[in-house]
Image (cartoon, rainbow, N blue to C red; front, side, top):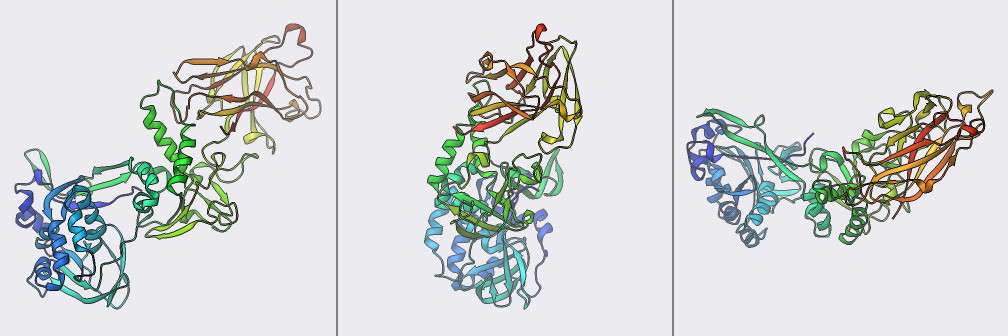
Length: 543
């Protein structure tokens, strides 16, 4: 589902009338909206009713001066003109003296300020629905996509001094003060002053596009589609992967640190996402994944939770895996969030229109809980093999708690004296330190009565690139490694090995580990060339 905010406006360049007068003179526009939900009993427009009430002059001035935004640009069309035209609205008009008219009028003098007033004030008091107040509670959808509760005598808890005033293009309700504006989670992160660095990072990924399918067409003029009512969908491409916290129809929780806490966490995370110089747009990619690394586990869709006191699962959890797999740690699950040491312990809660924001002083996670993950290249994942020499291999499956994913790779030499080699690629390495390990299984996993108790002997090589993108190979100190034939053996090939460049989410995999059998002919009786490889395993070290 796409997070979206829909704005309705006339595409000026695609109709025969000018934009300044289009909303009142274009028959196509009026034909589409005239009578849509309007009430009988009045021949006045909403704008006429508003201007004839001296207690609403402040509100009228704001509507006259606030212009419609289209594609992030101010148009000549004011909201006064909209309410005078053929479109149908419900208007909630606050009385004079109940809001700061002068500050709003000052804001609309600039494009940015006009946009703020449009979204937070005007849209908060206009609805596309023609909604009368009734004794039973109802929900009314405002132009800013927020729902307000209505019933006879009040709207969203605000007293109505005069309601159900019908106009030929809608309904007017007069309230004793403005309707409260409640941030959704996305707005809270982006607009609350103490969340400013989080918002600046997120807003970089805002995009919008014109949706022809959802727009109202009036045909084609000289080969160009003409739209009476155009729908622009605004969305944030980062939210698609971490949680649609801009969606007013969903319920989320989010946790975010103060400005100082965010900056400290961001600076540390950025060191792990340094790409080599051959990666196009490396700085932009670094910014994206650093920001996402901090937010990916900080958003929780409440429909996915079972017991919030016991644990919280972040949005990526369901697409990742459920439950423990062969003893591996489970990411995206946070136990006892409100208990001491939990991610929400001591957090300040802020109610939002689509959920709850928990504000903390520091980023409440550790890198190893989130982006600094263990990396596993499973032996049986043969698609990870980039090269092979003098060997064949088979995938073997066995159910055992100490065998990763309950499978392993049986590597067989081509001849009785062949020293084979096999290279596995490693995905998603960060620019950080790892213990690089190979997990070798004993032959007893397939033959418990008479297993081969000869150890494997091999060398290892780590292929990677430096900051310039130049290919490098580390020979692991030219060591000869020997497995323990009587147990599942985790052999550290390189301790705290530093990858200078990040290879996260890249198609061009630049990191691999080569295992090379290194048994001399005279050692054949002492060592086994056949190997049971469980996996290549990278254990992260925090920089």
